[in-house]
Image (cartoon, rainbow, N blue to C red; front, top):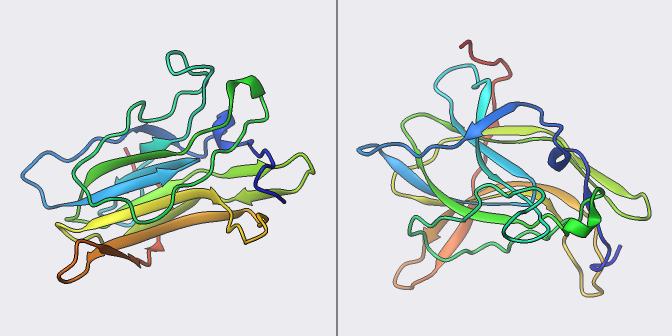
Length: 211
């Protein structure tokens, strides 16, 4: 499998969502918050989890999109314009663009990078829909619907990377893999650099909250 091979995201970005979603809304101050940078070439939702259930409608933080042009995209990304909340420069690399099976002239799905403030008074859940990437040789990778819960810390910064990636080797070949990673950005003493430290999430509740 070479870097130049075109891949397609066949489920998520074609509209077969596993759960309902509404746009994410940042908390209103004064609230203890963490800063989060979301990078995805599929989708990422973010929700506070106060008990043993999860919201029936998840809050969409980012979703890859593609279009015929910037003015009237065929599948708009979310958000349409990336936002910044004053985080440190990105540490982790971005994700690759993934070409679609339908309407190939619309171009590939482009990764989205955007920043948010999130509340930390209760655990916070990141989730993503199922997605599938396949190449012209019928080889494919299927990434499952996932949800993980994290205890984020007030005043800290995190990078959330969710989607489909590949660890390219020196020959320019690799195997596509599913990515669901959260890293805390730890500032190194006496230098203007941050170290990305992996954060382990816990299993999310399976039951939907009652309305």
